[in-house]
Length: 234
Image 1 (cartoon, rainbow, N blue to C red):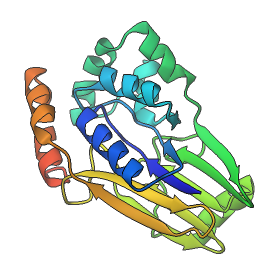
Image 2: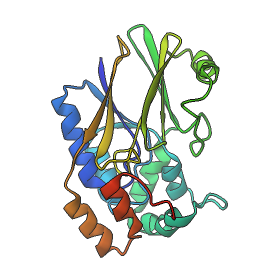
Image 3: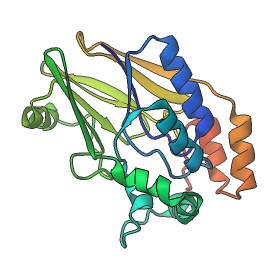
């Protein structure tokens, strides 16, 4: 099975469209989305519609939950705070209801290998594990779920490592990559061999930047789209 894995679209429709086309050209059998469909970018409504039209399997990210459930104490700082209420206001009741249907994990068996996926960490989608940290941390998670493939979204940076006989990976970010270069991130995983291929997919920034400015969203986002990193002062 050739599995396409994506995450952190963050309301960036041109990036999502480009990465889906690239994965189809790679001949993937299935595409899994590890959350954060919305937040930051100018296309929350359009991204949700695209995910539904494509019938993508998706789980909830921290941003999806923040938008769907306006709970106190969950507001991000800085640019995130500036876009949260705007994002929520763009969505209809039906679209907010869809975000509330998203589960916080995905579990499936491919042949003899079991896959489990989360955004962040189990039960804490806003938290991240250090991919350079001790292997035993990841091994405990895989043992807990009986999994040989552990996918963890949310770092905005494509990462993968072998742990024991298994694989741990984060596909990076489709819509707000922090890999140090522009473009959309995606990952190809062979569920039989555990071989991984990282993709960096270029896309047209013009429509994205036009809509960003038209909605008067934080201009620092333009820097991130162009460079693949947040300026240090932000």
